[in-house]
Length: 429
Image (tube, rainbow, N blue to C red; front, side, top):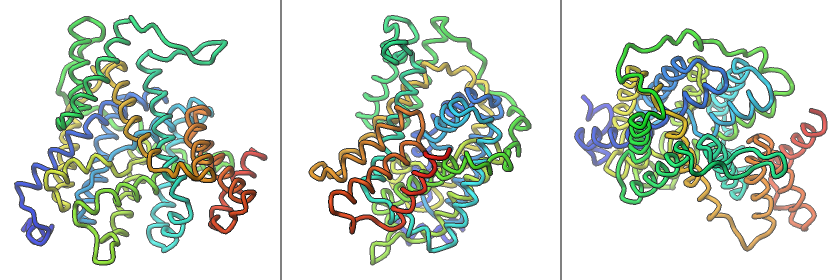
């Protein structure tokens, strides 16, 4: 039955290989069930509800990707977007978390519409490669700054804005040790390097009396505090237009980039080099975002960590289905999630930032009209604490630099329209 449904033989894989691939992918991204609730908690969302919402959103999105699109790709609330949700939209701009969830919901609905129309390719193709790479790197830098802050390595300063924290403090030392552990384990290709480091650092912190231990297994917490609590009407206000599009653009580019990155290794491309069943994969991601907002979590997106499972042989949706089942079982580990301190998850944020920032290496550093606007996009995200602002300033810079450099023909018309819209946004709002 499994062979027939997932086309295992046709894809050159077996049930055993798919099960192993699913377990490997889950271990590499399971850190999100600890990190995401902690980030959303800062936005005022109930930690227990956020934990359940994270697990269920990941399970639902990944199941759709596996059963509907037959892709070995797992989904979960996206790193970077969760930080923007909390520290940018809620704490930075003063919107309620309910309104922020409404913005995520609307972005998901727009994603569904785009997935049904051919316009999605036009939008993806309109954004130049340098800007796509810069957006990923900028989100990484944004995430890294938050990780350094949560780990106590960076603190605010009245004169210099930021300064080094008390590096000899026990919690800071634990965060540093966690980051080194993740880097070493990842270098040695140990599956679940991030999750292992988080659990080890947490255990050491508990043993040293730095944080409490709340248990391991229990009945799942209530989802009532967040279930269908998104404020869709409030998210339709003019001031949230840029935020909605930031959620939409990042999710769209992140999903497309992840699918392209894993498709070659998983043999998901046809003879013309195009991704097989791409509309179904995009639809799975879009529906997952809508479902996640309804459950009470930030944007759900495809995870590049899926490449770990593909590396060990995962080729079909059975891999994703295994991951979905494991995320579903995770809802019983809420006490463990509440035992994870900030200094244990901070290294994970910084390490993910390192991985995301590596995309800067692919930018054409011989062409100033490409790398200068790209750096504006990447740098302004952490410095303004806003993904939307970074995207807007980067797009505007790209169009102006190309225009006044005599290279207007390289500007996609849709890119020009987006730049004008951002100019109006900055001028009016």
